Image (cartoon, rainbow, N blue to C red):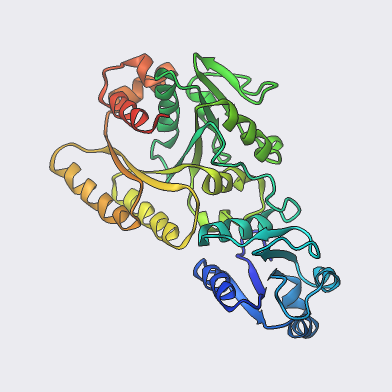
Length: 364
């Protein structure tokens, strides 16, 4: 399968309820379940008769399948693309078994992990319950939404609230955080660089993409808050199963983040792009909670109409939060020209106050 294709799946699970849960969940994500084996003999026959289909498939099995054995799984591993096993109880006869997932989101996250990086087996996932940091990823529904400006200033406002904060530029297509505040040599031995009291920044490049799990495990233990600038999140569902390095942080944020804040602009094209992203999110299971922010809202009746279209597009997803930021071209332009944050340009500007209010809402 290509990097952009969704997984093709074979199930080999005797427990009808669990098998139905697996097949139904993956089908709802748009993935193809091409064969549902009722015993090992049927599974082996299918792979023998359909070698090309089997070779491109992910086999999901449970040790309750009649006739299954460690040797059978070892042989099947040579015939299918990847193998992942689930069990309700520990079973020493089989290797790398996962506990039966409690939710559809957990199942999808594990399967996506095998598609992206089958050798990692998802053993390096950060324990969300024990970590220190609150992680918020900021993604853009389209272009020119002010995503990077919001991420930068949100991180600054959190640091002003005396919360140690790491800002990560993960916008692989157009990294811009360092340029916005005229910072050079972002990387350091620790992986991030301190630029202000309680505020550090980092940039994920192709070289760092392969060690994102380790980097984020360290960061989530050291900071109170982490803000990630993802840039555009168009084509989200494909990117979550994409094995290319450019999708690494988007995938991590959706699987391990606390909040995915989707930024939209209020014009006709901006709302159209937002509706496309919302349609994808309705069909895509992610662990991170979703919020929406309408940036650059106009004043008066025009602004009310813009906000109405925005709410119509987003409320059906029952987001964690829906936020609105009014247009403030003067403050945004001044910050851009002076290459600094909004609080440094004019701490009383409406734009700065709006982002400060969001920081107060999400601080830990």
